[in-house]
Length: 318
Image (cartoon, rainbow, N blue to C red):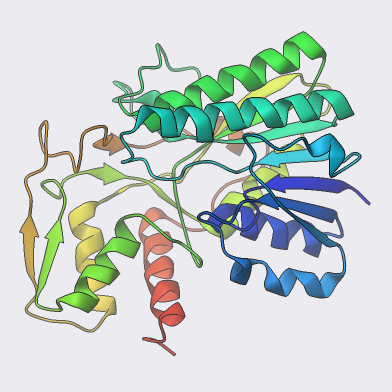
């Protein structure tokens, strides 16, 4: 039986990862400060008797006082808001926190350090779909810059201290328990005003989306193929993409609305939703497909499933 620490384990991706690890028989410890995570996301996991929760801050906690050792560390904790424009927030929540958890991994000699990175590290990539070896990497958001800096820390720790690690550059992950993003925002806006929907940007932003279960399966699959490797980077995405305007139409349809006026803000810098918004994102997933994994759902299917899941959570769908 393997053991794992999941930072941010009460959050969106983290809680689904916890569910999967427990289902596979792991012993799991969650570290979360519950600033964005929710106890509701992991309360069902207590039934296994193999879950421990540490309420603490990944930036400052001395985990050696709380947890003697684990086999794997899944570092999911981060400030999740790509639109956040306060430099100190990203520095503290996404870089300092990663450094602190890496120090714990080094001290206990963890078998593997798994880091949830982001497609935003690529910035406005000139090559689409974008492979892992694309460069130079020029993030256009503070969030992307912080994720890239954290990736560099993980890589350097692996090579300097003989650790093993992997960074997953995630496309837009969607599904139950989602707390932010375009689907979440559209549903909230339409509940407030079912006749008008404000859309940030010009609606032509086109990106790929991944169903949460596909994302977790990709992570677990890759871990089985890392034996003997020091550090690797993998994209996790789908093989298609969808526009923001199309997502708006799908949300309107799923909510059973008609006659909704779509109001585009026009955005900034050629139709972006906000400063730092990557307008076109599609990841090359050839590398991870070579290991035997591929997504079950397309971007459109993932978005549809996520809309329906959110509406069920709100009691608007059976």
